[in-house]
Length: 441
Image (cartoon, rainbow, N blue to C red):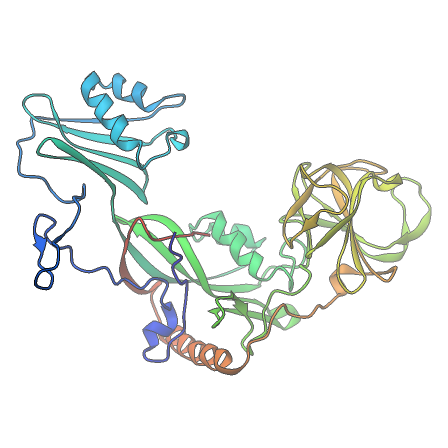
């Protein structure tokens, strides 16, 4: 399937610099599918195939049937429930088989059937979600089935807010999907742990792509710009989206350094710091003072635990007071430790390779523990370090023409943001074809 370029900076205009070119909409105007295209003299005729999105010869519609799948339904059961005749049921199922995987049908998938005066099907539209619609149309005595092109509207949206209690509650006030909130937090995962380090009065800005159909949001595209400021500690983090000349896309600081580093700040998507890194801590169970060479993050039992960096499983099993534990081995003699787990990700074993942010286990209270939490540690060459006190190198750094295009785009973007007074910065249209690939956050 064709992959669509996600975002490219251009200096020709401010608009292109801000929204980039996620899609190159070069679809030609639809030609008459009933006409032969006349080639050069003496060459064979090239006749375009029929498509279901080309209207058939006008035929009077006598009745229209609407229906949708319910839990446990097969397509035939749903059709039968709204009194579709056996002949039409067979025609619909036979024609959709060529382009639709019936195993992926879900409740609320819906259909519309137009019939003529003889109770024969003229047209059937079947929609599995807003981006996937299939049409069957009768041309004379032949039924033609195809996946429809889907018109979409793409808005470039800017939102800002401040923290009262937590990042997630602040985003909730903006009436956006939690998925956008997690994606924003994920951008800064190697710089700040929003569960433990965000404070009231912190401020944020986000510029992102919003896809809609008939004024209904169907998904979010790229986060083009993200900013998080902490006035109390005089810290500011900015991230700009960019896709380089080799096709690698990421978020970068203003000077072209990948904001993602070799290690993320916290392996939990949500958690509360209950015990800091210390050489003298009174053990909550034993009551003795001894080193605690990691941090404890309290979270509900079953919360996913992520690998904080690319690596390999060095140990997986039960280890004394740590209970169920995973130890990962990384480059430069680093190891990370994840203790008190309730269980492990299925399929992991000693020697398994994992990527940064892969789920490796789940929060629990095994071993010597007073409640569900994660004991998280980092060591290098056997020496333990405070995970929240470490700074790691960026994954990549822009240079040459990539850095030039990136810097130019950033200048234009910031110029637009400084003058923008509305939530929506820009709106454009796009036709999603069956050959296109569209990925949302």
